Image (cartoon, rainbow, N blue to C red; front, side):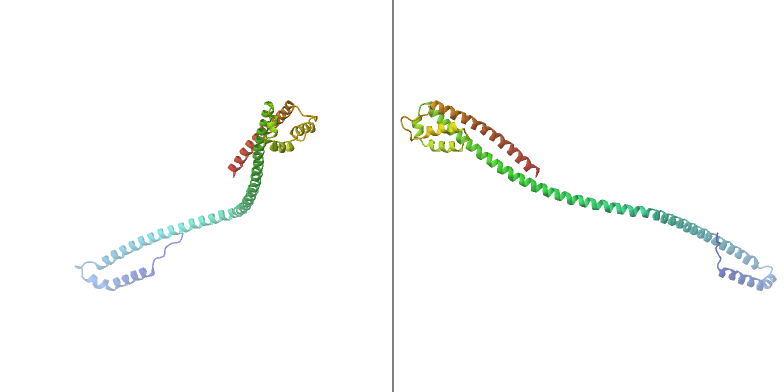
Amino acid sequence: MKQAQFPMGTSTCLLVLLAAVSMTGASVARDVNSPNPIRRVVTMLQMMQDKVTKEGEKEQKLFDKYMCYCDKSHNVLTQSITVAEAKLPQLENSIKENQAEHDRLKGDIEQAKNDRRDAADSLAAAQALSDKELAKLNKDIDQYRSNIKALEKAIAALDKGRVDAFLQSSAVAQFRVLMSNLDMSPSNRDVISSFLSTDKSDDEYKPNPSEISGILQQMMDQMQEGLENSIAGEKDETEQAAAMTKSK
């Protein structure tokens, strides 16, 4: 442990005082009745020595405390540097891993955006197709209802024996169009065409009204089934369209 050094000015001051005491000792000794100046100087020097010693000890303690603090700080800093240097490779690897994760997440986000865009396009196309199909079903439903209504009028007229009145009505034109668009057997089509024909001689075959009514009833049953299927399809398309709208 290093020792604190006393200032040179203090030693010089002591030497000067001792010299002054030795030079005045003889003259002071002659006067026996006056106070002893040597004793006074010695006492003063002892007091100064004690003070200087205490100050030196105090400074030595402060110096030792400062050196201990420096040693501890040096050890702590050295240890911190060692730990930091040991963690440096781990931090570098962690940075690389985080960068790779960032790049992966960035790619996932871009892929999600593309998927969302594709899904939106597919949804729009499905919505357009659904709207088109729904419009077709609604048109078919209206057509079925119109045809069934025309058949009901024709069957009612036949059942009441009003054949001539029916053939002369404006409903015949609609009925002709209906017959041309319906899918029916050739024999039934010939019977209906013969029934609707206005150019028949007296001896030409005339279909029985009950026979015509039976054919028309069979056709109406088929149309009724088609109407029910179209209504069910329209309901399904409406529900699907609502689900697609909700998912947007």
